[in-house]
Length: 139
Image 1 (cartoon, helix red, strand yellow):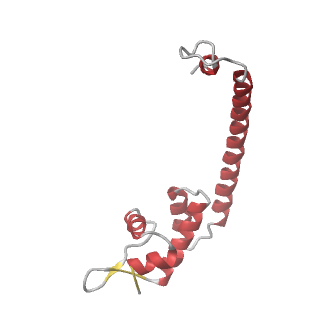
Image 2: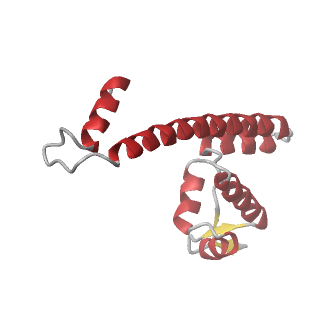
Image 3: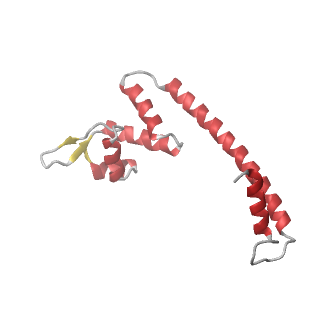
C-alpha cells in the first residue's frame, strides 16, 4: 500500500492532482488507514501512469474517463482510442494549416512594414497595415 506522497513520487503526478483525479472519478476512491491517510495500490499507480501518458498526448480528461470506463467494464477500449487518435491527428492537421496561413499573412505584413516609417499616430506605419488587415477579415 502506498500513501499519496509515495504514489506521487512513484508516478510523477502531484498529490493535488491525484486528489483531483479521485474527486472527478478517474481514480477510484482511496482506502483510508486508521489515521485517515489515503492508501493506494500498485494498480492505482498503473492507472495514474496511463492518465499521465494520455494527458501528455493531449487526450482530454473526458476522453481518458471514457477509455478507463470501458476498461473498467472489461471492454477493450482500443477501437475508441484509435478514433480519438485519428480525431487528434485531424485537429492537428487543421491547426497546422491555420498556422501556415497565419505565417503567410504575417510575412506579408512584415515585408510591407520594412519600408514604412515610424509613426506615433499609427497612420503610415506597419500598425496601420495591421488595422487594415484586421478590417478586411471582418475583425
